[in-house]
Structure formats: C-alpha cells, structure tokens
Image (tube, rainbow, N blue to C red; front, side, top):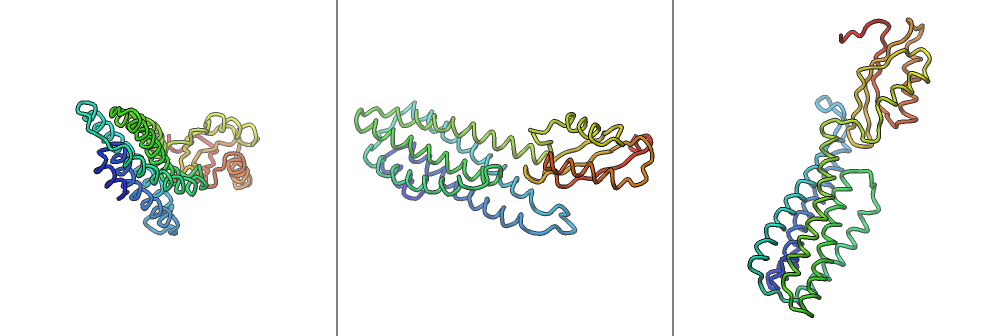
Length: 267
C-alpha cells in the first residue's frame, strides 16, 4: 500500500492511488475479519444466549459497505480526471503495479482456499480480488500509456474495475443484511418444507407460525407450531421425528417445536 501511494503520487496514476486506497481498507477489512473469527469463538453467556456467531456477519456487512465507499471515491476521481487528464509516468506505474499484482495473487490464493460459504471470508476475499483487478488494470493502463501516450486509459480502466467491485460489494451487503434482518435462507422453500413434514409425520395435521433464520448462513434456527390430530401419548416422539427431518434434510440444527391439540394459543 505504501509503495503504491508513493508510486501513484510520483507517476500521477489514479489507478495506483485507487488501488492503494483500496489496500488501506483491505488492511482494515482483513483485521476486522480476523477479529470477527476470534470473537465468534466465545461461548454463549447470559447476555448473548446464542453466542457471538453473528459478529462475523456484522464484519461482512461493514466490509461490503467499505467496498461501496471505495467505488464511489474511484468514480468521483475518474470523472475529475476525464475533465482534466494529468500526465502519467507509465514506467513507474508499471513497476509498482506489477509488484502489487504479485502481493495480491498470494493473498487471494490463501483466502480462496477458505470456506466459500462463510460471508466473513467471502468479504475478505472480495477485497483482495478487487485489489487484484486493480493491479491488472494499472498494468494494462501503464502499457498503453508507455506505447501510445493515451492518458485517458488510466481513469477508464479505473471505472471498469470500480464497476466490477460494485457488483460483488452489493451482493455481499445484500446477503449479510438478509442474515442480519433474520431472513429465511434464500434456497429454502418454506411451503414445500411444511408440506413435506405433514406428509412424512402421520400425526401432524397442520404446521403454522414457521420462522426460519440464521445466526450465520451455516447456523440455521427454526421455530414452528405443529398441530396434531389427537392428543398424543408421547408428544416428544413427534417432536423428535420433526427435528430429525429438519436436521437431516435441511441442515437446521436448532429448532423449537410447539405441539398443539386445539386452536393456536397465539390466536
């Protein structure tokens, strides 16, 4: 990052400065990711009875917002450079961008081997991947400037990278916000799950008040009301059967089942 700041100032390259600014937020994003993993391993207590797993999602959400901020800054700087293109030193830009590319490839390979379904790792990987694109764009811009002298390529490629970052950042913010709002998993069809439980458990006549959410995309929770045809001799057998289906077929490891033999008490 420091090398890119110096190189960007000396060469006058927006692509390098944009990449350096992005690497600054990357440093903070990676630190936040590490802190989130450390905090999430803390056991549950009387104040946070579900534990600290959700801290990872908060980290992913903050990382996504920081990416959106970077996109806005790059676009603003690109517009000002279109209006008044500065001279850019292509050789200096090429050397610094090449060094940045090597560093970003190493970081990306390390993170890409992590849990791809974990939003916390996904946020960190997106930061580094967008840095990788920034380095490639800076190298291409430097080569064009060296051989053609066309200075406009610098802000043009910066905008192209910003647009690529924007899509990934928006997906990250949207997914992490969905978890924070306790939305149901996107892949889960609640109506189909309800119908399957009714057909697989003979004693069940109706299922309602179904709520599904996740502490993280991997830690799913569920509550539901289950109405039975008649008063069962052992309601626990029905609950155990429903829980087994939820765990084995939907990956829902924590469920709370309320058995009803009459009208719903919440009505």
